[in-house]
Length: 417
Ligand code: PMT
Image (cartoon, rainbow, N blue to C red; front, side):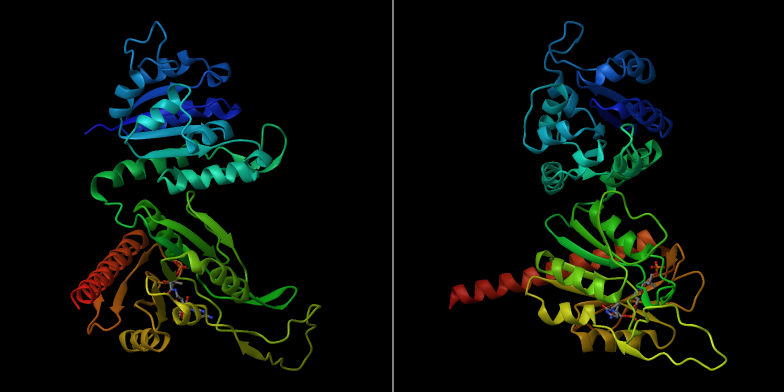
Protein backbone atom coordinates (compact mmCIF):
# COMPACT_ATOMS: atom_id res chain seq x y z
CA UNK A 1 0.00 0.00 0.00
CA UNK A 2 1.29 3.49 -0.81
CA UNK A 3 2.53 5.32 2.25
CA UNK A 4 1.86 9.03 2.73
CA UNK A 5 4.48 11.25 4.28
CA UNK A 6 3.76 14.73 5.58
CA UNK A 7 6.93 16.71 4.91
CA UNK A 8 7.18 19.75 7.16
CA UNK A 9 9.64 22.40 5.99
CA UNK A 10 10.73 25.04 8.47
CA UNK A 11 12.64 28.24 7.77
CA UNK A 12 16.36 27.64 7.45
CA UNK A 13 18.89 27.86 4.65
CA UNK A 14 18.69 24.05 4.27
CA UNK A 15 15.01 24.32 3.23
CA UNK A 16 16.02 23.85 -0.41
CA UNK A 17 17.32 20.37 0.41
CA UNK A 18 13.76 19.33 1.37
CA UNK A 19 13.04 19.16 -2.37
CA UNK A 20 15.60 16.33 -2.68
CA UNK A 21 14.05 14.59 0.32
CA UNK A 22 10.66 14.85 -1.37
CA UNK A 23 12.04 13.34 -4.61
CA UNK A 24 13.75 10.51 -2.71
CA UNK A 25 10.54 9.61 -0.90
CA UNK A 26 8.61 9.65 -4.17
CA UNK A 27 11.21 7.39 -5.80
CA UNK A 28 10.63 4.95 -2.93
CA UNK A 29 6.91 4.92 -3.81
CA UNK A 30 5.60 7.35 -1.16
CA UNK A 31 3.03 10.09 -1.65
CA UNK A 32 4.31 13.33 -0.16
CA UNK A 33 2.18 16.20 1.20
CA UNK A 34 4.12 19.33 2.09
CA UNK A 35 3.47 21.81 4.90
CA UNK A 36 5.68 24.88 5.28
CA UNK A 37 6.18 27.56 7.90
CA UNK A 38 5.85 31.15 6.71
CA UNK A 39 9.60 31.66 7.21
CA UNK A 40 10.36 28.60 5.06
CA UNK A 41 8.43 30.27 2.21
CA UNK A 42 11.03 33.07 2.30
CA UNK A 43 13.75 30.52 1.47
CA UNK A 44 11.83 28.38 -1.08
CA UNK A 45 8.58 29.14 -2.86
CA UNK A 46 5.65 26.80 -2.04
CA UNK A 47 5.23 26.50 -5.80
CA UNK A 48 8.42 24.41 -5.97
CA UNK A 49 6.97 21.81 -3.60
CA UNK A 50 3.55 22.04 -5.23
CA UNK A 51 5.07 21.27 -8.63
CA UNK A 52 7.18 18.40 -7.28
CA UNK A 53 4.54 16.81 -5.03
CA UNK A 54 1.53 17.44 -7.25
CA UNK A 55 -0.36 18.53 -4.12
CA UNK A 56 -1.51 21.79 -2.58
CA UNK A 57 1.19 23.05 -0.15
CA UNK A 58 -0.19 23.96 3.26
CA UNK A 59 1.16 27.04 4.99
CA UNK A 60 -1.84 28.50 6.71
CA UNK A 61 -4.99 26.67 7.80
CA UNK A 62 -7.20 29.61 7.04
CA UNK A 63 -5.77 30.75 3.72
CA UNK A 64 -8.47 31.41 1.14
CA UNK A 65 -6.96 28.95 -1.33
CA UNK A 66 -7.02 26.12 1.24
CA UNK A 67 -9.99 23.91 0.39
CA UNK A 68 -10.12 22.42 3.91
CA UNK A 69 -10.80 24.81 6.83
CA UNK A 70 -9.59 22.35 9.50
CA UNK A 71 -6.72 21.05 7.45
CA UNK A 72 -4.34 20.48 10.40
CA UNK A 73 -6.76 17.85 11.72
CA UNK A 74 -7.62 16.10 8.45
CA UNK A 75 -4.03 16.34 7.22
CA UNK A 76 -2.55 14.95 10.44
CA UNK A 77 -4.88 11.96 10.46
CA UNK A 78 -4.18 10.93 6.89
CA UNK A 79 -0.40 10.45 6.96
CA UNK A 80 1.80 7.49 7.89
CA UNK A 81 4.77 9.60 8.92
CA UNK A 82 5.27 13.22 9.90
CA UNK A 83 8.76 14.31 8.85
CA UNK A 84 10.19 17.75 9.57
CA UNK A 85 13.27 18.53 7.47
CA UNK A 86 14.92 20.86 8.07
CA UNK A 87 13.84 21.33 11.68
CA UNK A 88 15.09 24.68 13.00
CA UNK A 89 15.85 25.42 16.67
CA UNK A 90 12.61 27.42 16.74
CA UNK A 91 10.34 24.64 15.45
CA UNK A 92 12.04 22.12 17.76
CA UNK A 93 11.41 24.42 20.73
CA UNK A 94 7.77 24.84 19.78
CA UNK A 95 7.21 21.12 19.24
CA UNK A 96 8.93 20.23 22.51
CA UNK A 97 6.77 22.65 24.46
CA UNK A 98 3.44 22.05 22.75
CA UNK A 99 3.17 25.47 21.12
CA UNK A 100 0.79 25.26 18.17
CA UNK A 101 0.78 28.70 16.58
CA UNK A 102 0.97 27.74 12.93
CA UNK A 103 -0.07 24.95 10.59
CA UNK A 104 3.05 22.82 11.07
CA UNK A 105 3.04 22.85 14.86
CA UNK A 106 -0.76 22.36 15.06
CA UNK A 107 -0.38 19.35 12.78
CA UNK A 108 2.36 17.94 15.01
CA UNK A 109 0.10 18.14 18.07
CA UNK A 110 -2.88 16.67 16.24
CA UNK A 111 -0.92 13.83 14.63
CA UNK A 112 -0.87 10.24 15.85
CA UNK A 113 1.63 9.17 13.15
CA UNK A 114 5.30 8.53 14.03
CA UNK A 115 7.40 11.69 13.84
CA UNK A 116 10.93 12.12 12.50
CA UNK A 117 12.85 15.39 12.65
CA UNK A 118 16.10 16.27 10.88
CA UNK A 119 17.52 19.31 12.72
CA UNK A 120 19.61 21.92 10.90
CA UNK A 121 21.00 25.08 12.44
CA UNK A 122 24.16 26.96 13.39
CA UNK A 123 26.54 24.88 15.54
CA UNK A 124 26.22 27.10 18.61
CA UNK A 125 22.42 27.07 18.36
CA UNK A 126 22.50 23.27 18.14
CA UNK A 127 24.84 22.97 21.11
CA UNK A 128 22.91 25.45 23.25
CA UNK A 129 21.52 23.76 26.39
CA UNK A 130 18.01 24.98 25.51
CA UNK A 131 18.08 23.20 22.14
CA UNK A 132 19.61 20.05 23.61
CA UNK A 133 16.94 20.05 26.32
CA UNK A 134 14.19 20.43 23.72
CA UNK A 135 15.63 17.63 21.58
CA UNK A 136 15.74 15.39 24.66
CA UNK A 137 12.10 16.23 25.45
CA UNK A 138 11.09 15.26 21.92
CA UNK A 139 13.04 11.99 22.14
CA UNK A 140 11.30 11.19 25.40
CA UNK A 141 7.98 11.86 23.65
CA UNK A 142 8.94 9.18 21.11
CA UNK A 143 10.04 11.50 18.28
CA UNK A 144 12.81 10.05 16.09
CA UNK A 145 15.68 12.51 15.80
CA UNK A 146 18.17 12.21 12.96
CA UNK A 147 21.16 14.02 14.43
CA UNK A 148 22.71 16.71 12.20
CA UNK A 149 25.96 16.12 10.33
CA UNK A 150 29.22 17.85 11.11
CA UNK A 151 30.88 20.08 8.56
CA UNK A 152 31.12 23.59 7.22
CA UNK A 153 27.87 25.51 7.64
CA UNK A 154 26.42 28.21 5.39
CA UNK A 155 27.46 30.75 8.05
CA UNK A 156 31.10 29.57 7.83
CA UNK A 157 31.13 27.80 11.23
CA UNK A 158 32.52 24.27 11.32
CA UNK A 159 30.83 21.74 13.62
CA UNK A 160 27.60 19.82 14.09
CA UNK A 161 24.39 21.39 12.81
CA UNK A 162 24.35 20.70 9.07
CA UNK A 163 21.21 18.97 7.78
CA UNK A 164 21.78 15.25 7.26
CA UNK A 165 22.18 14.26 3.62
CA UNK A 166 18.76 13.86 1.91
CA UNK A 167 19.45 10.14 1.19
CA UNK A 168 20.07 9.56 4.90
CA UNK A 169 16.79 11.32 5.77
CA UNK A 170 14.89 9.24 3.22
CA UNK A 171 16.51 6.06 4.54
CA UNK A 172 15.51 6.91 8.14
CA UNK A 173 11.96 7.75 7.02
CA UNK A 174 11.61 4.46 5.13
CA UNK A 175 12.93 2.50 8.08
CA UNK A 176 10.22 3.97 10.29
CA UNK A 177 7.55 3.44 7.61
CA UNK A 178 8.58 -0.15 6.94
CA UNK A 179 9.04 -0.94 10.60
CA UNK A 180 5.68 0.55 11.52
CA UNK A 181 3.58 -2.35 10.24
CA UNK A 182 5.59 -5.27 11.51
CA UNK A 183 7.39 -4.02 14.55
CA UNK A 184 5.95 -3.23 17.91
CA UNK A 185 7.39 -0.47 20.09
CA UNK A 186 7.86 -3.20 22.65
CA UNK A 187 10.91 -1.57 24.24
CA UNK A 188 9.20 1.75 24.99
CA UNK A 189 10.06 2.70 28.58
CA UNK A 190 13.39 0.85 28.55
CA UNK A 191 16.67 2.78 28.67
CA UNK A 192 19.26 0.58 26.99
CA UNK A 193 22.95 1.23 27.49
CA UNK A 194 25.05 -0.45 24.80
CA UNK A 195 28.80 -0.69 24.30
CA UNK A 196 30.26 -1.17 20.81
CA UNK A 197 33.55 -1.28 18.95
CA UNK A 198 37.15 -1.80 19.98
CA UNK A 199 39.22 -0.15 22.68
CA UNK A 200 42.79 1.00 22.07
CA UNK A 201 45.45 0.73 24.79
CA UNK A 202 48.47 2.92 24.21
CA UNK A 203 52.00 1.50 24.36
CA UNK A 204 53.63 4.80 23.45
CA UNK A 205 52.47 7.92 21.53
CA UNK A 206 52.33 6.03 18.21
CA UNK A 207 51.49 2.41 19.07
CA UNK A 208 48.56 0.70 20.71
CA UNK A 209 47.00 -2.69 21.38
CA UNK A 210 43.54 -3.19 19.90
CA UNK A 211 41.34 -5.76 18.13
CA UNK A 212 39.26 -6.24 14.98
CA UNK A 213 35.87 -5.06 16.24
CA UNK A 214 34.20 -2.70 13.76
CA UNK A 215 31.30 -1.63 15.99
CA UNK A 216 28.72 -3.04 13.55
CA UNK A 217 27.10 -5.42 16.07
CA UNK A 218 26.76 -2.78 18.80
CA UNK A 219 25.53 -0.15 16.35
CA UNK A 220 22.93 -2.59 14.97
CA UNK A 221 21.71 -3.19 18.52
CA UNK A 222 21.44 0.55 19.14
CA UNK A 223 19.53 1.08 15.91
CA UNK A 224 17.15 -1.83 16.50
CA UNK A 225 16.50 -0.84 20.15
CA UNK A 226 15.77 2.73 19.12
CA UNK A 227 13.36 1.60 16.40
CA UNK A 228 11.48 -0.46 19.02
CA UNK A 229 10.92 2.59 21.22
CA UNK A 230 13.80 2.34 23.71
CA UNK A 231 15.86 5.30 24.83
CA UNK A 232 19.38 4.30 23.82
CA UNK A 233 22.78 5.42 25.06
CA UNK A 234 25.64 4.09 22.99
CA UNK A 235 29.17 4.10 24.38
CA UNK A 236 31.38 3.50 21.40
CA UNK A 237 35.05 2.59 21.27
CA UNK A 238 37.05 3.14 18.11
CA UNK A 239 35.16 2.36 14.89
CA UNK A 240 35.41 3.37 11.26
CA UNK A 241 31.70 3.25 10.49
CA UNK A 242 29.02 5.89 11.09
CA UNK A 243 26.95 5.41 14.25
CA UNK A 244 23.16 5.29 13.84
CA UNK A 245 22.07 8.90 13.26
CA UNK A 246 19.27 9.02 15.79
CA UNK A 247 21.06 7.66 18.84
CA UNK A 248 23.18 9.61 21.32
CA UNK A 249 26.78 8.39 21.18
CA UNK A 250 29.59 8.83 23.70
CA UNK A 251 32.96 8.22 22.09
CA UNK A 252 35.76 6.66 24.12
CA UNK A 253 39.14 5.19 23.26
CA UNK A 254 40.52 3.10 26.10
CA UNK A 255 39.01 0.40 28.31
CA UNK A 256 39.35 2.81 31.25
CA UNK A 257 37.38 5.51 29.40
CA UNK A 258 34.71 2.98 28.46
CA UNK A 259 34.50 1.84 32.07
CA UNK A 260 33.99 5.43 33.31
CA UNK A 261 31.35 6.21 30.64
CA UNK A 262 29.39 3.02 31.38
CA UNK A 263 29.51 3.49 35.15
CA UNK A 264 28.29 7.11 34.77
CA UNK A 265 25.33 6.05 32.58
CA UNK A 266 24.44 2.78 34.26
CA UNK A 267 22.21 4.13 37.10
CA UNK A 268 19.71 5.47 34.51
CA UNK A 269 19.75 2.28 32.40
CA UNK A 270 17.23 -0.53 32.65
CA UNK A 271 19.23 -2.81 30.34
CA UNK A 272 22.98 -3.06 29.70
CA UNK A 273 24.31 -4.87 26.62
CA UNK A 274 28.09 -5.28 26.33
CA UNK A 275 28.84 -5.78 22.64
CA UNK A 276 32.19 -3.97 22.71
CA UNK A 277 35.44 -5.86 22.38
CA UNK A 278 37.14 -4.39 25.45
CA UNK A 279 40.85 -4.99 25.98
CA UNK A 280 41.44 -7.46 28.82
CA UNK A 281 45.00 -6.17 29.26
CA UNK A 282 46.75 -2.81 28.88
CA UNK A 283 50.44 -1.86 29.06
CA UNK A 284 51.17 -1.10 32.70
CA UNK A 285 53.48 1.68 31.69
CA UNK A 286 52.66 3.92 28.74
CA UNK A 287 55.96 5.34 27.45
CA UNK A 288 55.96 9.13 27.10
CA UNK A 289 58.15 8.96 23.97
CA UNK A 290 58.20 6.60 21.01
CA UNK A 291 60.04 3.41 21.97
CA UNK A 292 63.25 3.20 19.95
CA UNK A 293 63.96 -0.09 18.23
CA UNK A 294 67.14 -1.92 19.17
CA UNK A 295 68.63 -5.27 18.24
CA UNK A 296 67.19 -6.89 21.39
CA UNK A 297 63.74 -8.35 21.88
CA UNK A 298 61.23 -6.11 23.60
CA UNK A 299 59.07 -7.32 26.48
CA UNK A 300 55.87 -5.47 27.25
CA UNK A 301 54.39 -5.88 30.67
CA UNK A 302 50.59 -5.86 30.66
CA UNK A 303 48.12 -5.47 33.46
CA UNK A 304 44.43 -6.36 33.64
CA UNK A 305 41.83 -3.76 32.72
CA UNK A 306 38.73 -3.37 34.86
CA UNK A 307 35.85 -5.69 33.95
CA UNK A 308 32.99 -3.41 32.88
CA UNK A 309 30.40 -6.16 32.47
CA UNK A 310 31.29 -7.84 35.75
CA UNK A 311 31.16 -4.51 37.61
CA UNK A 312 27.69 -3.50 36.37
CA UNK A 313 26.35 -7.02 36.95
CA UNK A 314 27.54 -6.89 40.57
CA UNK A 315 25.94 -3.51 41.27
CA UNK A 316 22.68 -4.00 39.35
CA UNK A 317 19.29 -3.16 40.83
CA UNK A 318 16.36 -5.61 40.61
CA UNK A 319 14.87 -3.96 37.51
CA UNK A 320 18.15 -3.95 35.52
CA UNK A 321 18.93 -6.64 32.96
CA UNK A 322 22.53 -7.41 32.02
CA UNK A 323 23.38 -9.07 28.72
CA UNK A 324 26.97 -9.94 27.86
CA UNK A 325 28.67 -11.18 24.72
CA UNK A 326 31.18 -14.00 24.47
CA UNK A 327 33.65 -13.83 21.59
CA UNK A 328 34.90 -17.39 21.24
CA UNK A 329 37.00 -19.48 18.90
CA UNK A 330 36.26 -22.87 20.51
CA UNK A 331 33.91 -24.55 23.05
CA UNK A 332 31.38 -21.77 22.46
CA UNK A 333 28.54 -22.99 24.66
CA UNK A 334 30.73 -24.12 27.55
CA UNK A 335 32.83 -20.94 27.60
CA UNK A 336 29.82 -18.65 27.20
CA UNK A 337 27.92 -20.38 30.02
CA UNK A 338 30.88 -20.10 32.35
CA UNK A 339 31.24 -16.34 31.54
CA UNK A 340 27.52 -15.82 32.16
CA UNK A 341 27.50 -17.63 35.49
CA UNK A 342 30.79 -16.26 36.83
CA UNK A 343 29.80 -12.65 36.05
CA UNK A 344 26.17 -13.02 37.17
CA UNK A 345 24.55 -12.11 33.84
CA UNK A 346 20.90 -12.53 32.83
CA UNK A 347 21.88 -13.77 29.37
CA UNK A 348 24.87 -14.03 27.07
CA UNK A 349 25.25 -13.93 23.31
CA UNK A 350 28.02 -16.17 21.97
CA UNK A 351 29.59 -15.75 18.56
CA UNK A 352 32.46 -17.45 16.78
CA UNK A 353 35.16 -14.87 16.05
CA UNK A 354 37.39 -17.21 14.06
CA UNK A 355 35.11 -17.06 10.99
CA UNK A 356 35.37 -14.51 8.20
CA UNK A 357 31.63 -14.45 7.39
CA UNK A 358 30.49 -13.84 10.98
CA UNK A 359 31.67 -12.18 14.22
CA UNK A 360 34.29 -9.45 13.78
CA UNK A 361 33.86 -6.86 11.05
CA UNK A 362 31.37 -8.77 8.87
CA UNK A 363 27.84 -7.58 8.13
CA UNK A 364 26.39 -10.87 9.36
CA UNK A 365 26.59 -12.87 12.56
CA UNK A 366 25.69 -16.37 13.68
CA UNK A 367 24.72 -16.15 17.33
CA UNK A 368 23.80 -18.44 20.20
CA UNK A 369 21.82 -17.09 23.16
CA UNK A 370 22.11 -18.61 26.62
CA UNK A 371 19.88 -17.51 29.46
CA UNK A 372 20.74 -17.73 33.16
CA UNK A 373 18.85 -20.44 35.03
CA UNK A 374 17.64 -21.99 31.78
CA UNK A 375 19.25 -25.13 30.46
CA UNK A 376 20.07 -25.34 26.76
CA UNK A 377 20.91 -22.78 24.16
CA UNK A 378 19.06 -21.11 21.29
CA UNK A 379 21.05 -21.31 18.05
CA UNK A 380 20.27 -18.93 15.20
CA UNK A 381 21.42 -19.31 11.60
CA UNK A 382 23.77 -16.78 9.96
CA UNK A 383 21.81 -13.54 9.52
CA UNK A 384 22.43 -9.80 9.11
CA UNK A 385 23.64 -8.03 12.26
CA UNK A 386 20.43 -6.00 12.37
CA UNK A 387 18.35 -9.21 12.36
CA UNK A 388 20.64 -10.71 15.01
CA UNK A 389 20.16 -7.53 17.07
CA UNK A 390 16.39 -7.98 16.90
CA UNK A 391 16.72 -11.61 18.10
CA UNK A 392 18.75 -10.38 21.10
CA UNK A 393 16.17 -7.68 21.83
CA UNK A 394 13.33 -10.25 21.57
CA UNK A 395 15.16 -12.02 24.39
CA UNK A 396 15.27 -8.78 26.40
CA UNK A 397 11.48 -8.47 25.98
CA UNK A 398 11.01 -12.07 27.17
CA UNK A 399 13.31 -11.59 30.16
CA UNK A 400 11.47 -8.41 31.13
CA UNK A 401 8.06 -10.14 30.88
CA UNK A 402 9.32 -13.06 33.00
CA UNK A 403 10.70 -10.71 35.62
CA UNK A 404 7.51 -8.63 35.77
CA UNK A 405 5.46 -11.84 36.03
CA UNK A 406 7.61 -12.95 38.96
CA UNK A 407 7.29 -9.56 40.69
CA UNK A 408 3.49 -9.55 40.24
CA UNK A 409 3.24 -13.05 41.74
CA UNK A 410 5.33 -12.00 44.73
CA UNK A 411 3.21 -8.88 45.23
CA UNK A 412 -0.03 -10.93 45.02
CA UNK A 413 1.32 -13.49 47.49
CA UNK A 414 2.32 -10.79 50.01
CA UNK A 415 -1.15 -9.18 49.74
CA UNK A 416 -2.78 -12.54 50.56
CA UNK A 417 -0.68 -12.99 53.69
O1 PMT B 1 32.12 -4.96 16.28
P1 PMT B 1 31.91 -6.05 15.25
O2 PMT B 1 32.97 -6.04 14.18
O3 PMT B 1 30.50 -6.01 14.70
O4 PMT B 1 32.08 -7.46 16.00
C1 PMT B 1 31.15 -7.85 16.94
C2 PMT B 1 31.84 -8.55 18.12
C3 PMT B 1 32.45 -9.85 17.66
C4 PMT B 1 32.90 -7.65 18.73
C5 PMT B 1 30.68 -8.81 19.17
O5 PMT B 1 29.71 -9.62 18.60
C6 PMT B 1 31.24 -9.47 20.43
O6 PMT B 1 31.42 -10.67 20.53
N1 PMT B 1 31.55 -8.62 21.44
C7 PMT B 1 32.23 -9.04 22.70
C8 PMT B 1 33.71 -9.10 22.48
C9 PMT B 1 34.49 -9.52 23.72
O7 PMT B 1 35.25 -8.75 24.20
O8 PMT B 1 34.17 -10.72 24.20
P2 PMT B 1 34.88 -11.42 25.47
O9 PMT B 1 34.37 -12.80 25.44
O10 PMT B 1 36.34 -11.17 25.47
O11 PMT B 1 34.27 -10.61 26.70
C10 PMT B 1 33.09 -11.02 27.38
C11 PMT B 1 32.23 -9.84 27.72
O12 PMT B 1 32.91 -9.02 28.68
C12 PMT B 1 31.87 -8.94 26.57
O13 PMT B 1 30.50 -8.55 26.72
C13 PMT B 1 32.78 -7.73 26.74
O14 PMT B 1 32.17 -6.53 26.26
C14 PMT B 1 32.94 -7.68 28.25
N2 PMT B 1 34.18 -7.11 28.77
C15 PMT B 1 35.40 -7.62 28.45
C16 PMT B 1 36.53 -7.09 29.02
C17 PMT B 1 36.42 -6.01 29.91
N3 PMT B 1 37.49 -5.44 30.45
N4 PMT B 1 35.22 -5.51 30.21
C18 PMT B 1 34.10 -6.04 29.67
O15 PMT B 1 33.00 -5.57 29.95
